[in-house]
Image (cartoon, rainbow, N blue to C red):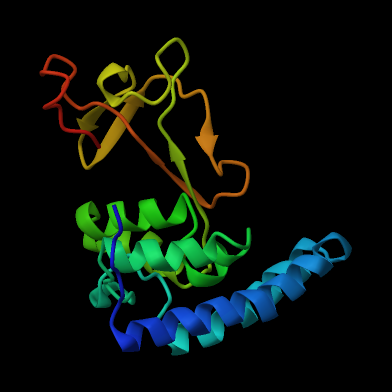
Length: 193
């Protein structure tokens, strides 16, 4: 079976730029990484983000109301195929895990205060996030087996449970904890926090 596929000329132009940018700028930085301090790497990544933002390619998984391009899955797939050439490309383009998924959670479910306090600085590259789901003595990250609970108390939540791994936890400024708010509910219909 043969598939015919092409994207719009304007987007193909963007993809051509991305490939050239990754090959010329990001590969060059990668060669220097062993010699640079984390502070120097962070400064270089910040500088590399400027042209990405100017071209409208920053945080492409989010809609324009959050500073992204709102690309659909096909366009994101084509973009990510090119970004996969470099381990630093996701950070330069604002689509690195777990920040990309966490920014989507905050964009969809965050309160106005959470968006201001966490989402905006996350998208600006001033904060890093973490994702805490996996639990000890359960089957990995299967959400139907979560034991950590969240119970509303006043204006906040009380968490009760133990997480085993937290993706990006050692470098994060904040983390999103996945917990069950109604442990007696059907596993596939529980609402999480």
